[in-house]
Length: 96
Image (cartoon, rainbow, N blue to C red; front, side, top):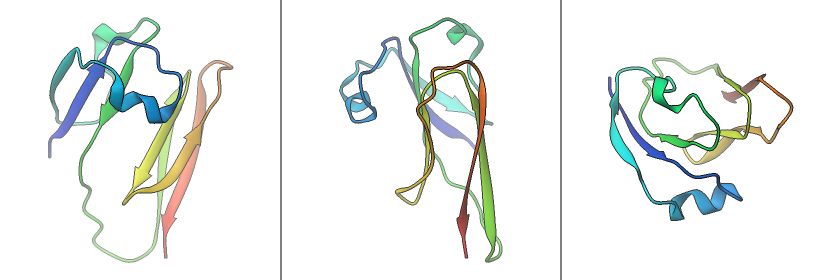
């Protein structure tokens, strides 16, 4: 599976403003990870993709980030981390 990725070298003011940022690089990754060249501050990265859900149930998602991050599944907000306090592990779940 490949995940399309857009990388912007800008700090954003709100999550809604991300789509207005100029795209610096585009590509595809085989797993969701932060590219090594983005280790410094003020990068915005957007991953898009699909996952296979073979059975009904509760599915958990995690992020480990030192700044804002969100995870959406089918346009439903699963993780909304607005922390600026260092690296934080966030968990969200979705399902039936």
